[in-house]
Length: 263
View (tube, rainbow, N blue to C red):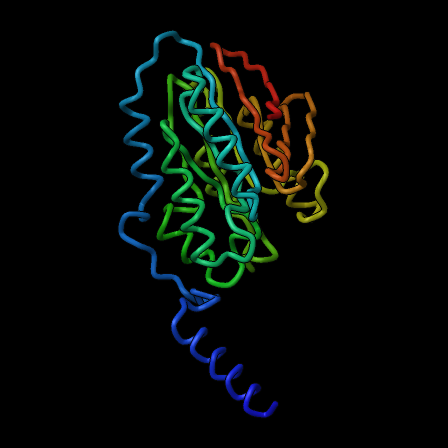
């Protein structure tokens, strides 16, 4: 019996020394592959080369993948079939534990998308060294782009995991040219309406900036459930990818409408 235990132990040693490690990455691993770097800048260039067949267009909003990778694949396949959707915005929580491997899986899946995509950072994306990985893989946490005389502003509103306040000065300045565009669309992971993850004063600051700069729609994730509120500024929350669900926003001149797709 003792001999059998020794043989069993020896077999286990061989198994674990000859196989790939169970945990391939440390939580502090942040060595982003060159092919995965500067994704936002690459996609802005792709969008600049996107041709409009009509003046109205659609874009998709996906959020909170965490570890629901199969649902992300299904959504990407569905979006690829819809030529009217010209680009995609991802609303944060690209990762769950913010491991490099999670970011790489996300990036590899998104490479199957046949149109440009853009991201905002989520609270889960700040775990471990996630913010460093995000910066290398995608780029700035706060940025904007223009398309068909509309402006799209993507904003980092994470406070607890990031240990910093949102840069509302940047947001105000970035939206100050709103009068030059047909519409302005804002995106941040944490919503100001139904989440308690922002203090009341920050919620009020965000709302005031949206109103003062004539933002048409502010779109979010984080709560994992659908929410819509119409007002001086409309607020939308798209459900998480726990189910293969995403939003489609149809933009035409100074109007828009929203459709939630459930696969």
